Length: 109
Length: 114
Picture 1 (cartoon, each protein chain N blue to C red):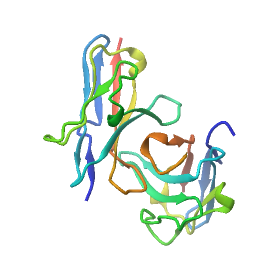
Picture 2 (cartoon, helix red, strand yellow):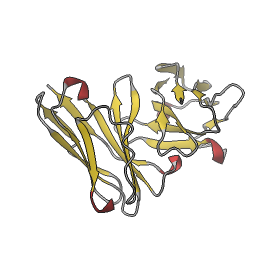
Picture 3 (cartoon, one colour):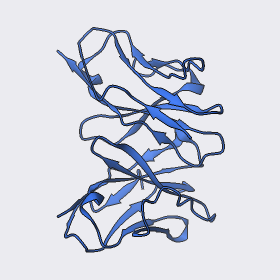
Picture 4 (spheres, rainbow over the protein chains, first blue to last red):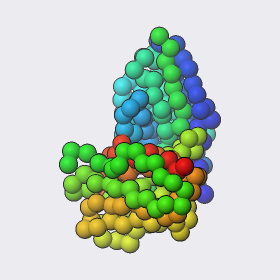
């Protein structure tokens, strides 16, 4: 069975501080991992995916197969980063994404 | 259209009534998904349509839930005999194919069962 765990429902950091949103997964095969973000009053949208190994809005995420983690990191948080963040997994051959319960990030000015 | 359109944006219904939620995906997107977003529960997969193939209904929580996709475009999610636990935001997403990176989400329908 596949599972995505985001242990923190709420996370607050000060502007300029580093931020890490945790995501752990359980899946027996090789998954695709994603981070989606929902800003206030906006639609859920893709932030980044592990296979592209890109940095979006200063965020990066590395897939650690040994620890089965896909933590989202940013070295210096900005106020506009305040949002709801969802980690998601797609199993091989699966039709859909499996989402975690989300972490609400608040960046304090 | 320019994006995924869902209607209505808000729906309040009495317990026991039937409701229909509509999703108009991006033109040309063959894959369409319905998810339910409940407070503290994250996003729960409900159903997936891909072209003319049989839908993947594995996420539907009960037989009160059903969905159709007509002509490979517009989809309707129907909830019969609504219950209070059906209250949630129902999200629709579409993509060019079954791939996580291509999801475009609609703004959702907030359903409240009173």
